[in-house]
Image (cartoon, rainbow, N blue to C red):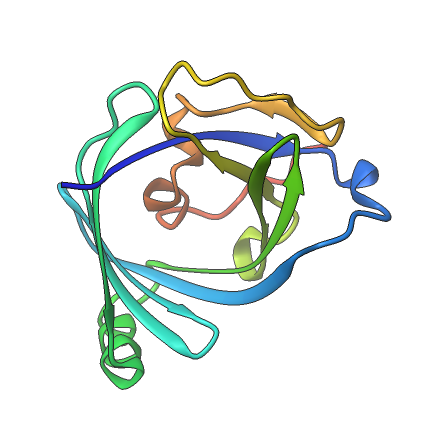
Length: 155
């Protein structure tokens, strides 16, 4: 069984200038179920099916499988409006690789950063572009964001 341990943060976009990214991937992800969360994702030229348990603190079970791209495209169509579009950029900071998601479409303007940890109590040096932790706030779970439009907020 795989365990995902991650913290999530809102990002101050003004402080991202000059940041050197390790990679960028265009992502479209949709949700087939919420309990458990069943997600289909197109990431660049690859397709994935992911199943996640309920979050306990900052941890949850996660099972991810690569699937044929054409299958992922068809499954994504089943999601209807429950699709998020974003650009994921990875950056190395403080000994961790951070994933910064720049949302597009009806969630344009939202920028979230995630860092995966080896243990729930692992210490993380927060970069200056981190604005506010939202790890425990269900409004920022992708599976909940997909259900509504993003209300633009200044961060």
